[in-house]
Image (tube, rainbow, N blue to C red):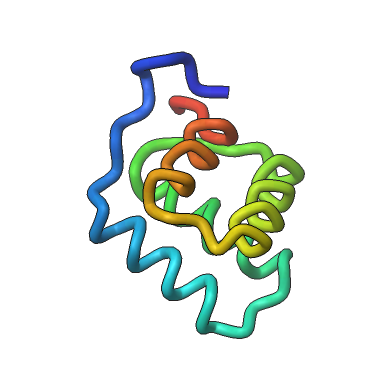
Length: 80
């Protein structure tokens, strides 16, 4: 949803922390989507909850790298 160049490139350390939390927390997809939404909102972005849930499923299924996570976040985030 964010247009090219309008979403920041998140630091790898932040993406790695988010990834670790998603993989090790034992959250269900709804809770994981809330975590991702909170991550984005804390950085000034909004996101459609349904799109975030779909992104979380892709993140979990692929055990995404930080680059993959960046792409998924760009796909669901919009500037508030």
